[in-house]
Image 1 (tube, one colour):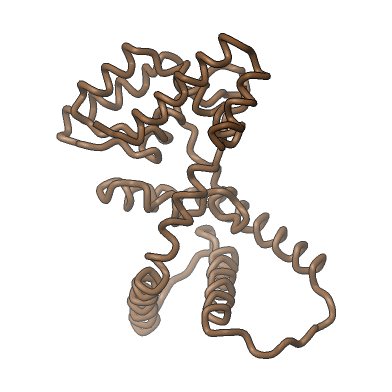
Image 2: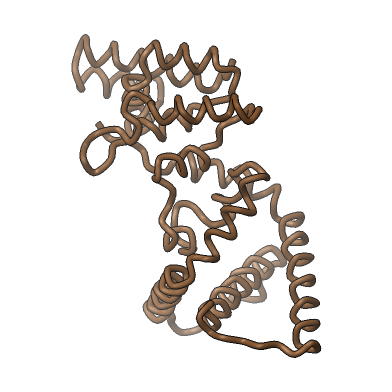
Length: 265
């Protein structure tokens, strides 16, 4: 049993009962009594309403790990006002596919791809977005990660346009926030490392923007070897960064995912 999923659904059921008995006034007071953010409470309530007893039983009996976050994703309201997965028909199909393939877990990213609700490419590339490329890929099972990354890169024109918009927005923000130097001494090592990694990220984004897939190249053997050596170094660098900062970013990533796309009902 997924205790986190069950606990949140139980809270949602209680919030539904409170609303039925006293309306929104009692709902808000109850949230205050249990120190629960009203926005989060409305999300719990809405997901519990959408996740009917038959759906819960199906999930419990499936033998496939389905988190609360997955159920919340299906319950989210589209622009039409209807849930993205009304009746969880897509989730049922995904569970069936997991049974056939021997899968034991359904990730939010996998479910989003099935629903067509994954974050937009520009949102993934935007450093100010709720979900980064790293967050999105980290949530995918290993056998899906390489395919998703290749699919992302091969969206040639879309990737190029999205990166250009992201870089233009960054330059605009830089112009707006640039001011006189205030001094204040040297930054500590953590601040310096974070600053340099952000600069490295910006350089990588600018590099991809400078050489879109439509930019034809014909490498000599020497140039090809140099590129492959650079690629190997970049892979080592990516691993080094993941080791140095990965443990510290895991909790923050989970918090961003939990805070994203809360349903207001």
